[in-house]
Amino acid sequence: MDSMDLEVLKTCARWQQQGKACLLVTVVTTWGSSPRPVGSMLVLNAHGQVAGSVSGGCIEDDLIARVQQQGIVQSVPERVTYGVSAEEAHRFGLPCGGTIQLVLEPVGPRSQIAELLTALAAGQLTRRSLNLRTGAVHLSAAQPSGQLTLSNDVLDTIHGPRWRLLIIGAGPLSRFLASIATGLDYQVTVCDPREEYRSEWTLPSVPVVHAMPDDLVLEMQLDTRSAVVALSHDPKLDDLALMEALKSPAFYVGAIGSRINNQRRRERLKEFDLNEQQLARLHGPIGLYIGSKTPPEIAISILAQMTAIKNGVDLPEQTSVALAKESAQIGMSGAECALKSA
Figure 1 (cartoon, helix red, strand yellow):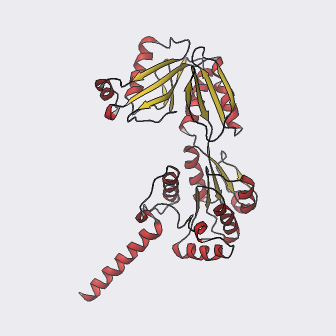
Figure 2 (cartoon, rainbow, N blue to C red):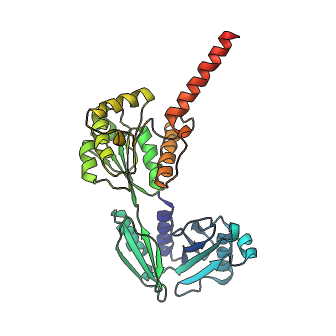
Figure 3 (tube, one colour):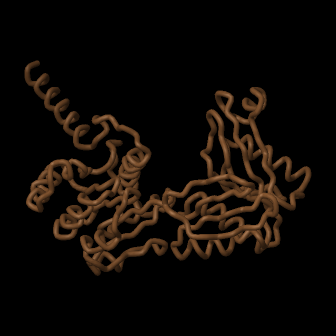
């Protein structure tokens, strides 16, 4: 599963190869409420086919209608603003007087879409600088903290995963977690030194590294845009890696397991001289409580918790798996007592 931005770029390249004229559309500025954030992209061709999204659908419909009526006539990028008036904002589904500005770029040889995809396939985080006066593009290395900027008639956009996820263990749950995380624009690495698990891995877009997890944690030099999830169920693999991850600036560190197993894990980690503050960073049982039972459901639960923390959302304590299950158990015990006393 590709991220939406990568899907847009791949579709753009494919249409170029097929000789179809197309427009690459990027959200560059928003005011008030808007359906899609700055940096969102879509590509549409002269036949009205679309990949990606810049709104809830109404702006896409207007762009398609324009292209079908007029064709793709631009020779250089064009800025277009939607939602200036209250009537237009309502028409295009922009709530609370929201306004959105787009750059419409006619795609051609100077767009360097194929070159950008080559860089992304090599794992390079890339800045794409578009000259709005000429349509010329320059590619360069980018930093994870880079953001879209629009100044002096140059639009700079950042492409490539800016978040990293290390998954320890190559079991079925890891496969679903890796697949969905890739769609969320994470650069995913799976680590498992066990040959029997690596040989059954069926996700070619995500590499499985044959290394000890704690060595890989140190090698990756985790930063505030990194997450580590331990899913091997093997303390020999998980514990040392978790110890190193909890000492790092990683924004999320979690481990699979029951409440009892996670309590035992915390007791073991105390022996590695982790302090209470570091131990408190460990999410386990992992994920948000959504009643998940199957690997796909558990993967969604884990990524929901990761996403909330990444986005700075202060989750209520009741959403944790441990507290929710404890509350449910207390509720069942209370019901049993009521039945006995009836």
